[in-house]
Amino acid sequence: MRRAALDIASTTISRRPLAPHEQAIRLLQQHSLSALVEQELKRKIISGELAAGVRLTEAEVAEHLGVSRGPVREAFRALGQAGLIVNEKNRGVCVRHISLQEADQIFEVRAALDGMIGRLSAERITSAELTKLGSVIKKMKSPAVRSDPSAYFLLNLEFHDVLAQATRNPSLIEAYRRAVNELNLFRQETLLRNTENIRISTADHENIVNAIAERNPAKAQQLLFDHVMTSRLRLHEARIGSAGPTAGTAKEKLHHKSD
Image (cartoon, rainbow, N blue to C red):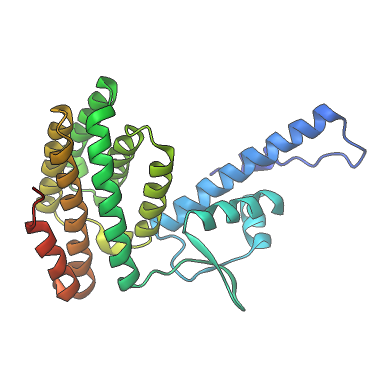
């Protein structure tokens, strides 16, 4: 985020009583600024620039971004609801740390949510959304992207978010995005580490889109569930160098197909 842009948007308002239209403008400015602050902090957290456990203060963030404390306070509230920051006793606001056990549990929740997303999107997706998914997959196959896990990560987020939006279910979308935000705190460990894994993941995406295009809800649900549980296996491989007992349970689930 460019500080200059925020400086302009946060120009000091005169201390005289504000007219109704000025109050409305100020409210809009504050709302827009809080969204910008939230977006920038979210970017820093997901990228790892702000690591788990890092303490955040309204004053320091406001000074760094060149805004008042109001938008920062609103951004903190939104990021807390998104599961990215927490208010810890005796420490204040910190970037959330998620244990491996918590991550396992969140993966299970996300697998269930993604399964439902697969089922509903197969019933409700539009041709325009299918075209968009195909475009994202095409970008995923680019040699440049395959050698850049960060670029692939962003395309992966876009792919799954398009699927979520295709459900036309705001409550499901909100729950899905929260789970994704929480798991993104593990981004450094779960990034796909070689082109072979990226190739396999992209092939999974193609199979998912084919099932959805065929209007096959049960197949799309199972494919998405398996896709997420495979990501949980990668988490264990990245963190402890092997699947481990919890990931072994995931393998059993992967081999269990619904009737």
